[in-house]
Amino acid sequence: MNNLAEKIVKILEDRKATDVKMIDVKDVTTIADYFVIASGNSNLQVRALCDIIEEELEKDNIKPKHIEGRDGATWILMDYLDVVVHIFYYETRNEYTIEDMWTKAPRLD
Image 1: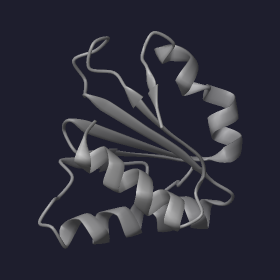
Image 2: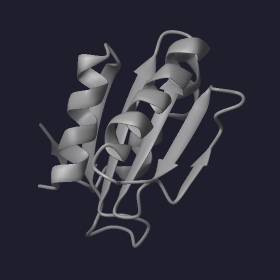
Image 3: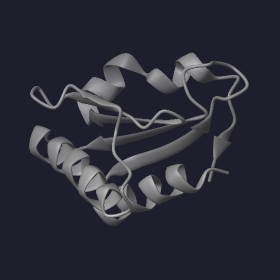
Image 4: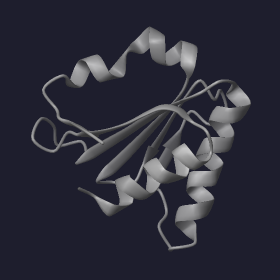
């Protein structure tokens, strides 16, 4: 498993994100090695989850290559190269069902 992905999962769970999943995608795509997917119950929580991940990882001098969607806060994508974090407003996650696109990739606990 990936230490960065595990750290992100812990941050999200500690901050009460819902339905947190880590998916090993390295054998099915070149985009990343792992996706971490989580939901928030409001746009404010989605943005706060993004902010806390960024703050906590910067303490270890880990910075995202790119962050998208922070303004709308319905789907924020944080690109840490080998780990891509998707933080959804729960209704948006239900609409896109991103996990269904990666059914061949193992889910990790």
